[in-house]
Image 1 (cartoon, rainbow over the protein chains, first blue to last red):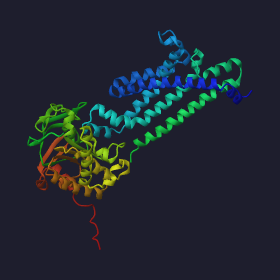
Image 2: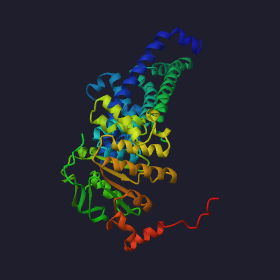
Image 3: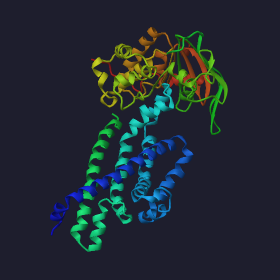
Image 4: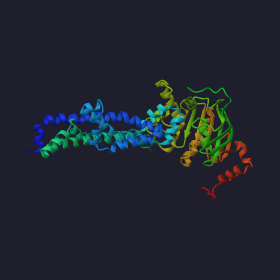
Length: 214
Length: 257
């Protein structure tokens, strides 16, 4: 039985696991964005925090993913369900690109433009919402793109703790020493990552056009 | 909303010093500008001209002494209100690259919540004031020439009809022909508008053309403060040096045939 036949005969399961995969990675990225983007903005306002915050996000990234799952296992509520644990772990990994790109994007706005905005009497809030965030949006979306692709890739490991997703096929295939089964998980996961990369890349280029001056 | 000018002196520097990291950028500056008057701050790069401007709209606060706008210390003003009553033009416009010409000009009216129709009418009026075609209103700054961007910068500063206008080398990045056009137009504009204007430049020609008074600065100090007519008679060595640097071309040009 080849890979295509395997997928066709198991299409319902492939579909279910793909949806599960998208849900895990999607919620994790969304959660990371909700925390990471405001944190990135915060450290442009309170520069003393930028080193510790980026440093902490960096350290999280160096923890091997299986070890991170292990660390989180004893946590109350989180550790009760594999999916919760997976989402939290993935979100923690996704924080770094989001924080870093938000910070870099805002820091990269032309200082003359920021000063002109201040001199015109924009409040801090107006400066952020009408000038800095729109001008940084291309770079922030680039961060979302990296975070999304990262989450889709890492979510395959979630199967190791029983959270489902396309990793199920990969681990099952490894156990069965069956390449077809491994591919049934790996190929859709790779396609998902490529699709997300392409879509967010298009958005990023559109937003990037805003930045370019003369 | 713009503050009404009840006070005769729109801008006053009262023994103002400004230090940054131990460096003295402004030293005991005393200077004032009346409504309807144009003061040109002349000086080399690093002489403190830009610092002086930023003290007016409270981008900076004085280390000692006080700056008064409309008779009120800048430290007593709400910075947002203060800045909205002062038009600010910088080199190359400082336009928002993600806004169209129209939105760039309308920034202050929009944050002041003017009704939409009034904003549209004001933008149209300003475009004609600064000599730009209405067709440009939906363009982005990157689609404009340097001169056009600068005109938009001036229009934006005038949008809410502020009683005070401060300009930091606004025409410095333009080619000589465009610069000369802009200078003449600006002179005509300022005669109509009757605002208190402080104009920063290092170009003596520009200063002589636009100023009612010239204040020459050097190393954070005010060296000379003279009505423009008296400048050519001044014996002050630094001002003489300026006049010499700008007098004549290196070689006589051949006469046109």
